[in-house]
Image 1 (tube, one colour):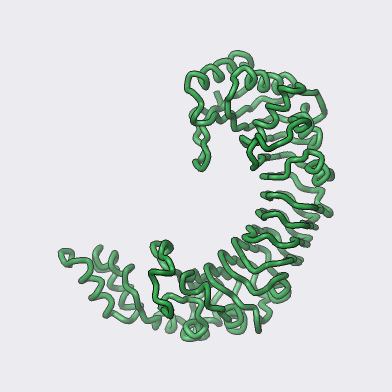
Image 2 (cartoon, one colour):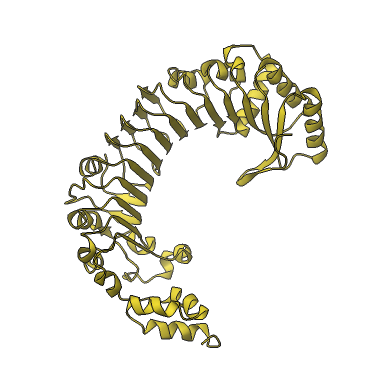
Length: 423
């Protein structure tokens, strides 16, 4: 069997129509196991015969992700997994015990076919706790209430629910919600009493985003230029916000935020402070500006002002855009002592060293003013000359031996690399 051409092995396995028999073949040899992933058709009798299944996951192999519309026949639907007719063949027979269901569809075949899969799932799976659907166009017509569902993930989905009203009504007990690249939304509102964790990556530019979640603790939001963003989450502790701009951001009852991560295009410092003026409990701040530094007005965008706005920070992480703007502000007006300078204990910064003397002056001024700052991690851009980087490291160590220094390298699109730890 090991000596047979792989195409012939695939042809042999393609004649094994039952999924249970195919699974047994995979255990026989390495060649059969490898070839089984290339079989294009299989009967799901094994699933239908399992009466006590609690978890089912169906998906198209990742290797097909690069296939374009030109590579597939117009009416082909052999990999259309959210096809209601296909799902009716096996889902009802296992639905009574099913607690977790994941379906990752083939976008080339599913994107132009409006699926009633959500309606079918809601009417048959009365014990479902976790639901994941990816790469599909979903209708919410005839969607029924699913009070047992607590975890929902929709990823790269076109959803016919412009304001999310059907999601709010039919899934009232969600504690975890992940909306990644969900299109079709205009003025979406999340109104869920029990929601604790939410990750929301908005693919289009909706008119407004409104989130009302009294139990929400951890919220990650990425969006593009909504006119209005309203967040009412009195229990919120961790908030990661990536936004290109907005006309208005309202934070209601969000005074308990302790970990805040901001990736912003809107760079008016007054606007930033106004947005988060009540978030004085923040202890860990990660901050970056996503616009190019030459486009940013830096007159009053200094490190001292940021620390004044968040007076209880003990940890500060500055991305490259924020560091460049704040270093430029320091060149123009220095660094003023303030309340925020007295609390910071740990600093992480991504450096682009254009002028080593100015960069060193900024670092030294920070350490002179922040007496409790004892842990400093500096990541130097990979394109900075090694001689310059070495001189910067030596100067920092010599000037402030009390500090625990950590050094690393960063570059756009590449994971940060640490070359020393706690020196």
